[in-house]
Length: 509
Image (cartoon, rainbow, N blue to C red; front, side, top):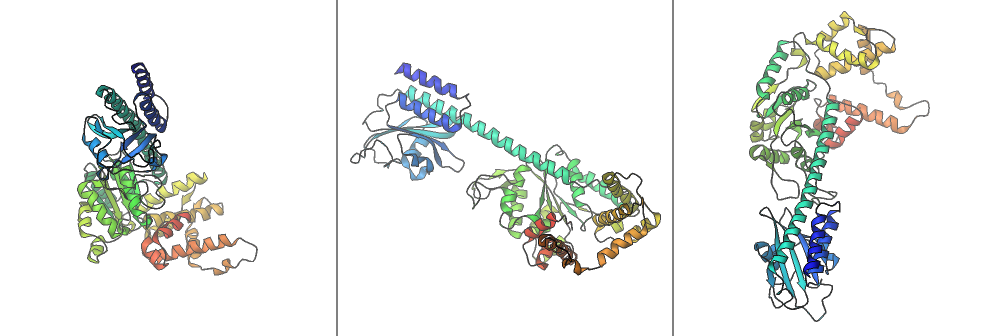
């Protein structure tokens, strides 16, 4: 027996560094126990994060056991094994209920007694699982040397640790891959730099430099289109977290039923469709920054959970009782008047004060003295580069007109207007963008030519419907202070669905 045991132990030890799947390693361990010890059944359990014992390999037991989870409090024998550092034996006449009653493959119909032995599995002082053995022979385990079972217990614990570390590395790699993909997407969506020489912009830069090196929450306020996202990027880039990710979250685009999961993650089985556990945006931002854009759109129920993360630095995945600690710097942005929202009961006062530690107000374009010429040159450079027209310029009279406009849509509106006028000039093969190119843009915006929806020639209905949908969304945003949630109310539809449609049509408020 000793020679056979040595061979089995060697095989198990060698498997610790093999490329076998975790399931095969578990089963190999159980098969080895069956060869060495006088048992008719054996089982290897892992203690999961929620305190349940989950069978990962069995021998001599019905395979249905592998589909179960055992709560120790409901199974006194399993609980006794967990509470002891030494192997625990239960004789054939032990009155404690047997967790495997009725599932032993060798159990005879009239025979309901058998010997059991179990041992807890520890790795560096932490309980990671248990091992159980059952025999139909009374007193079968009396002759087993304690050293023998303890050796197998140590190898079983080492196997669990080895597999657990590999799984953790794979999970970390998956998380890092997700972070990398998020950063790449974020970099691609970044529209540009903070451009401007006005005193207002210089003050803005000073405010950013003042708060960037701290870990204070930052609340960025300003009208639609002023460049709040660029300010957030600048704060993060100048912070000591700049080498860590800044995760972007558009609160207006969070799906109604999945918003909590998107922010805080979920565990497998937490809801229909949750086929695997998933980290939320806050976990992905751990050690870095999370940017909550359009914060005013966040539902009240999520505001309470967000407050907990800010106050205690901990969160719970949907469907889990476990608390996870995160170290995240929060930057938020909104075009709403949150003080008024608080007064109206639409935003939590405690959350507002937590986020408003260092407010940064981004000035509207109409208040930025002398910045329109600089911005126009910068924005026009994009068009020159895209169409390879290095000599495309703006006529002085056209620039005067741009400086005289109020620009309610701010920099974004200026960019769209300038781009449309530039495209008209390019279409006419002109290298100077004249005043008339802007006037034709305005006329095109004002004319409502509904006859185009009744084509004279054959055309796909889908394209016509999508064009009409796009114009409806733009109209709803114009009527709703360029806010997605109000536009959704205007069109009597779900906010998340409207936002996704808007992105599909490349619409920005």
